[in-house]
Length: 542
Image 1 (cartoon, helix red, strand yellow):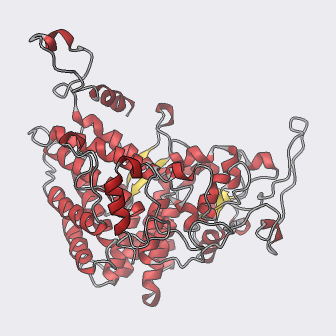
Image 2 (cartoon, rainbow, N blue to C red):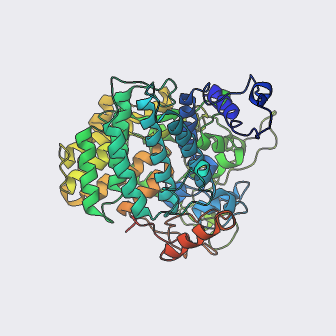
Image 3 (cartoon, rainbow, N blue to C red):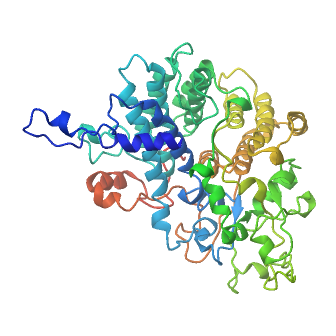
């Protein structure tokens, strides 16, 4: 992957030479060490697009700071060295909020631009018909996620500065979603399993076109299901098209990118959680832990630990106690400021853990949060851990909902639900041996916790929340919560919050859009019912 970015950095110099009166200018002034379009392998752009997209919603780019706590998967008192978690836990501005809200936009369009350049260089090249179509899939997945976060965004004129579109218009989310679904239908159906394979692939597919075809149709299913309330007809049409084309069928189809810390491609969530203040401040939410305990979820002993006594142990990656009975979630919306919302004033506050004083460490202090469960450090603080993009568990659960809604998807809601629950448990194995639960154990758990017809939609979407919570794909958990309404969550009412004590429904546009693309930005804001606020709903959020 490192080679990929070096090669692209050479490419960006193409076209910068000025016209000269000398007929020998090109021969005299061409740098023999600089890549040109004729010498550059456009396939090198694929891993750059894949990693940039995957990381665009991880770590401080958005997910762990906002959505993880908006949907009460994680929690934080956010009053110590990591006060920036107030954005998520309490819907309250921190000193860097304006910077944070630009990240998904910036990184998402960067990922899409790599893919667009790859498409531009391969579109009419007979050597790369499949690579060209994969480039389109990558653009669609990136811009779909940007739109999910912000609403109306540039699509039809995006990425086309070379064509003169320096201030692209914002397409309505309804328009761009339908255009993306139509485009996916066109390109994915034309992928040829006997044709060319991408030479560089940061997914686990190793260029396998059959897997890429499954990925394209699975992405189509996810985008289609976003529209079940906003446009049920389009949702049904494309969900059924996706199934007919062939979606994921096992955890072997999971789309993810492995972090590569030695080459500076870290998992963004893990990079946040290796910071001592973050490791101490970020805990599993009471809402999440209570749900896992109530459902006897076998993931709990893998994903959650209570750290050893003392502040220093809480700030380090030392292994904690994974005993299920001892797991305790931190309630969202509390601080350590001494007022009415001080955590220690709750009647169920368990008390701090004592300092551990040793001859080698005489400076330890009690840990006020020490008895609350944190994400298991061995799993979630590994910067080489996977960044999940789309999993079979999500696909199976979406198929369960589609079946429940009466779509023709080749199975029953109960069967797909069982497969989705088991797959979500099995996908943890991508984090390594310490997170692995056997397929037999996962199947046994799924069989013991079947779908109930009276609460089907609730169960399906609560499991979707659990899958993305334990895999740390927080933006997707939030998007599906907005779409489905499950799980039912109680908003936080904290003084000075930016969303009128409601769970945020979108992120505001990046502030520089108002100056760099003013007319398009103003038109977009006017089209939003409620304006450019945290509480305005995107089109499909109905």
